[in-house]
Length: 300
Image 1 (tube, helix red, strand yellow):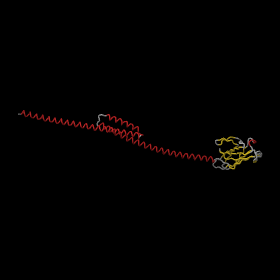
Image 2 (image 1 turned 120 degrees about the vertical axis):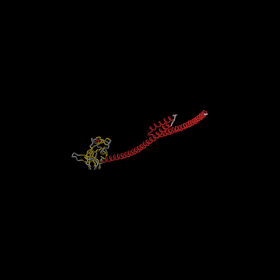
Image 3 (image 1 turned 180 degrees about the vertical axis):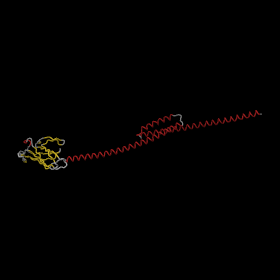
Image 4 (image 1 turned 60 degrees about the vertical axis):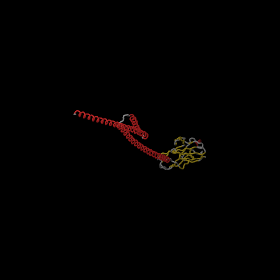
């Protein structure tokens, strides 16, 4: 009887063990199945995030392309970042075994590239603003320089006009200009004559006016006498008058004291018979390179 009871107990224990093993196997199978499903789901999520990373990189590349066109001040730095983006896109596409750590690394890289882009934007905008300020300052400076140039040109023109006015003011224009034929006796007495045969010289007289602008000192007057035949009578010296060479008949140096002064200049012919002829004579007076008076003389 005792042996039968022991055999029955062993059989029951075996059944319990078998049942427990069966439950364990079923549990392990369920766990394995559940883990498999979870792994598949994780891979799908990681693959989706991988695609998202690629899309973000592609969008960022397009964004950098636009920035390179617009932000020319930092285009070199933008080009470098764009090259890095293209490398990352190729790298992500070629990555077969994806995991959360890799995804985090790529997202961190994307964040850094975006931050770099924003910083480059700020730098480019700052440089552009500075360039605009420089352009405005340059335009303002150019305008000021142009105004200054116009002012200088106006001032120079006024100075030139003033200089011309002063130069003109320094020219003595004689009054009471008169030419006569004269005969000079041995005693020195001068007799005026309108007869060709009696005239030995031609006297040209005039009054120099008062001029407070002209410097005190020597002043030279030239007289040119042209006879009816068109010949210049007298000394026939050649002097410079302005830019021209002038043949003169006589000259007179006077000491000018800024007061009115009467002056007479005598023209002595080199050959009286050839130079003193019948007819009308033209007389010209010059001072400081300018013709300052003309008159005529008729000898009968």
